[in-house]
Length: 358
Ligand code: KG4
Ligand code: ZN
Image (cartoon, rainbow, N blue to C red; front, side):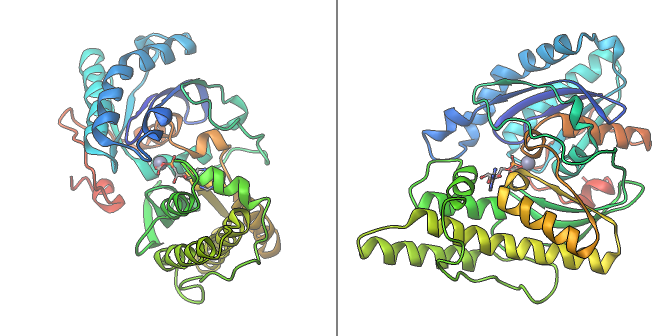
């Protein structure tokens, strides 16, 4: 399965065998281009995708030592994401599907993030262009994973708890009422003067600070499976302002205390969802799944509560095409493919995508 992902600022392609084995993958990152603007500029992203997409796909096939004849299908992210950016990947995938006659599978970006957990991480080889990004972490567990699982998806655009059944059908159990966890990380990073993308930098500094230094709010901790991070963000902004006025900003302590508040909430809600659904395995996916504090706290909670927690390796947590190809394999095996009229949807709910109501 060829996977193509262009929903934000990464032009990515991958070839995955049997939904498990990554034969090759390429991620052309635009992060240095957007860093000068302090965030992703949609039009700039679209234009860069147009420049990169053909080369990235061709290089990936070449790295895998394959030709189009070897493939069974083409999977592409169809939403949610930046509309112009999504359209570049979809147009390319449709062109390839038309030219080769291969089936086309439109993949919801979040379903892709979850499917990253099904990949055999030991096989992960990658060509990275532009920013090298974090190194691939060693797989902390053995054995391949299958649905059913519970998924905690934490990225720059999403914070959701999803139940994923045997048929790879998603049921949303809870999600954020305002900011996504990664968005809160990026905003706090900006407040304390760290450059975009700030999440990994806050994570790094949090390791050097005192998580008890400041008591930031943990919204909706005691009830339900929804999240809210905007109150936390405002509390951090107030504290940063107060410290700046009094002459010294304790950046590491602010980062550590903020991270502790986010991690406490994510861990508590994920553990509650595991209890309520009776699932045995929790998959943590999306860019924030790379967070060291979250990984340590969830591993400890899983051991205490008696469930298994799986984190894809760091490289597969952030946007990539192997996860899209992995989801495409599962979907195609279950008989799902899309016509060449497949379109991009900037806002795409899992329900609308699953039921084909788009
Ligand atoms: O999944 P992703 O690559 O893109 C989206 O679909 O959003 O996630 C990117 C997000 C950014 O907000 C980034 O700051 C955050 O994930 N992130 C982290 C870490 N690494 C990436 N947040 C906290 N700690 C990290 N180590
Ligand atoms: Zn993502």
